[in-house]
Image (tube, rainbow over all chains, first blue to last red; front, side):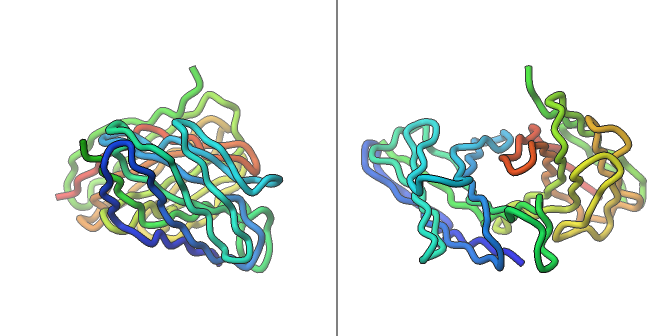
Length: 119
Length: 111
């Protein structure tokens, strides 16, 4: 079984300030990790993904995330946010293979973090 | 243009009236899935399919049916909708081991 916890439901920040959105997960098998963004009245768009290799992953719009296996975390960061970054952000995991009743392809999402950037 | 297309985008229906939400992808992806999004609960997976004729339950399958007769299509069927199925629904597709590409969503209201 898998679960994802996004530690902050809402994060307000001023424009040009740095931001970190926190994501912890638990899984009985190795996982792939993703961050998605949802702008108002739109579908979800992939920001970045970790499949293997370097634990620091860079995505679109200046976002990056670091996979920490020992802490089972995948926090999202941006050094300087813009008004246009205001959106809801979702962390998600999927198992790398079928094991122990956890099916490959089963994508599990966190509850979402609403990022609001103020001028 | 690579995309996942859902129809309809908006739907209001009455309790018990069967409905189908269609989903089609043009990226030749093996994997397709349906989610519902509710405030404070994030996205929850309803059903997913790893290939034609192969489907499996997600976290909240009760009250829903799916079929995968062709690789590109993955319709979601509500045989007897109830008000607790009022939600925003997303279809997604993706390659094996990769990310999911999402449709624009279907906002369903059951009265």
